[in-house]
Image (cartoon, helix red, strand yellow):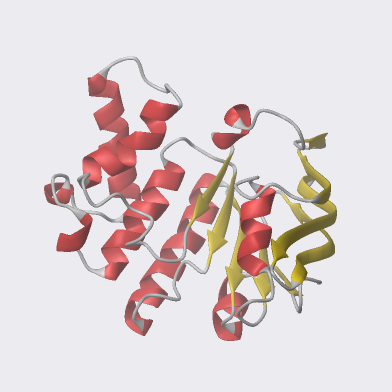
Length: 225
């Protein structure tokens, strides 16, 4: 049995609204084993995306604990975990800076985390990741608005992969794409998981998509599993 890479214990996330406290996450607990895909499925507004962001502490949880490799990451500086945990967002267009070309977009996480000392190694890695996700190198200087949705999402996946993470939150990564492109991206994700030994938390409202990629599935409803 593979060891547990992520454990979420009694996670809560409340938002203040004019009508009182909104319970986006209410006592959520689960675990994910190394090399596994856990699918989280549920209707819009049930708290799936908030869960994904809370695990990476892009949204700060109200209460509960998140253990990564057996160590609690609550209250910790997340910089050391950012290279190990990444996220691919739902809308590839809104999550990419329109002023940067593909090369610059993929190199951004590498620059922020100071992974390489020189530009040659940096761009070698960028081109290597482009090859891995199936982005033609001739597109290096293209901008997001010049590309279709499938290629934009490949940029998002390439950005996440660039710093060699072990665990990736996939937040509705194919819901904004055409059906034929969805299949390409899902197959790519399955291939990357095999080749790179990745672990996924895969969030979606589409049952057939979740069934296609998941080892286990958790259903969310009104902030609970």
